[in-house]
Every structure is written in structure tokens, then in C-alpha cells.
Amino acid sequence: MKLKIESIFVIPHTDIQDGDMIKILNEGEERTNRFDQNKTDIVFLVLTPHEEQKLLRMNNTSKNNMIRLFGEETKNWVNKDVLVEIRKTRLGDAIVLVSPSKNSTVEATK
Image 1 (cartoon, rainbow, N blue to C red):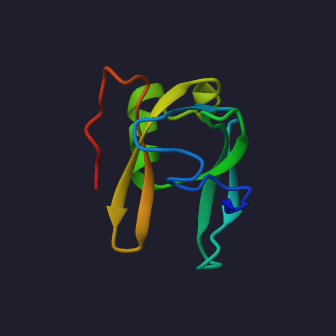
Image 2: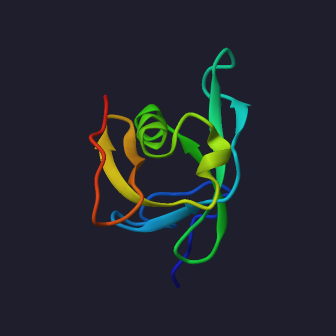
């Protein structure tokens, strides 16, 4: 029997794979960081390649890439398709949004 991790958040290698395209569905909202109550995360509703709506916490690299691609106003990000990269970090796999298509890239910032 094959089991799947159930979560309202996007899980790398389960909900999306490196090279997949996802669609941003809302303007995002700030939520308290789950590890540090003094910090906030920006969380977006996205559509996965399997047509599931899931939440995605946007890391700083993705946020900077999205600003370069679509501007600082997140309402301009709604209904945009973006390419996903899954990168290894010391804390595990990170989802990074890199470009609006498989044919273009944005230089990621650290």
C-alpha cells in the first residue's frame, strides 16, 4: 500500500517535483512563523500540477524572484504560472519559484 503525506501545505517531491509549473491563486497573506512567533511568513494559495489547491510559504529567494518578475504588488502575481525548483538546504528541501516558464530563468538571490 502506498501512503501519501496529507497537508494543506505544498510538500516537495509529494505535491510538486523539480521542474513543475504551479499557478499563484491569491495575493497571499501574512501568518505568524511556526518556529518564531516574532516573525511572519507570506503564504499563498497555489494550484499544483495535480490540480490541488495548497498553501505555499514563500521563502526570501522566491519572494525576490517574484518581485523581479511581476513587481512588488502581489495582486499582480495572481494567476501567474511559475516554474518550481527544489533545492537542498541544511534544513531539508526548499521550494523556489524561479521563472514564469521553463524557457526563462531569473538569477536567484541568497
